[in-house]
Length: 372
Image (cartoon, rainbow, N blue to C red; front, side, top):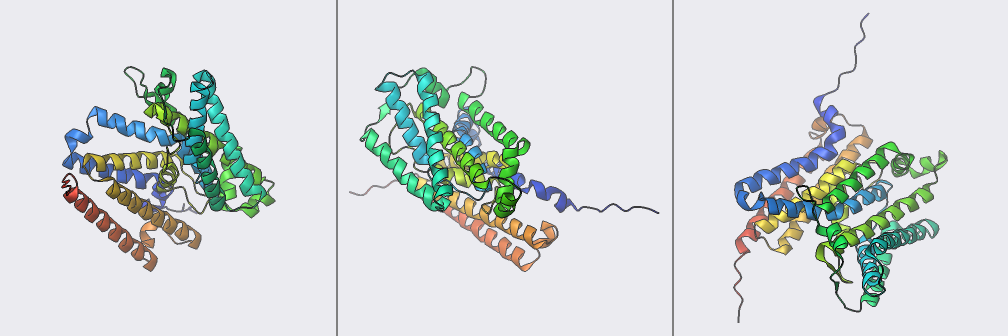
């Protein structure tokens, strides 16, 4: 009598890694395209350093946002938390004479407090995450505007600028070390701790998680506290990078970070998370924006291209999760279904739109003909 082990297809074996494969494939496509279009400018050491510095700024926030989104939440206030934390830190240093070694931890602690407020508003008052964090985004930004009064606070001690743009001689930049360290910590927290397992359980089925004894509201608050602290760290890094901070700083942090996490495969429907995917998503968006700048394409087209990538990624992962729920076979076979064919046509249309926009952007960029 012989036992026949169930055979798995190639598509079934790689499906658990699709969240990482998809952004890595897009990164490879950017590298190939820029290797043909602008190899000298894009691959020079100074430009690669700029890409890493830009990506490092978002890594801590992407790590924390992964936990928030995995448990079916969202945080739209991280840009305002970053700005307000930076403003408060700047005042402590410049107006009250605090040491930078004291002001930085206080700023991160204040960010955690703002995250705690977000979490309590959502869990205690049953305010939807989207509305609650959007409202608090306005509140925190308003406080930043009131405190700063239109001032730009600049010229900080070397320790702070080192956090934002310093470099260990012969090694990678300090902010990149900070960013990668937070991503590694997030990976271990997600895969090796109860907090990470509870986060996935809550996102998969909050009611079932509650019945198993998990304090759902408490763990939601923990995730928002982490997100607030990491947003404040992002504000500290931004202040050091620019050697300045103002109340209107970090206006699009929330959209950029959420986009990176979603592109990296973390599901907006909850229960599916990939910290490596979030890292790849941050790197992908930074590389794409830098590529568009290198090609001299205007900022407005950069926003359109980012939106196309985000919509395509969300459509892909939503389809994958629907297929998982429906119990369809391998994803290659599922592409032959009507839903799969619709997804392919939709993706092809978006890709064609992106190529057309890049062509239009390249045509009109660099030809300023001011009238008058």
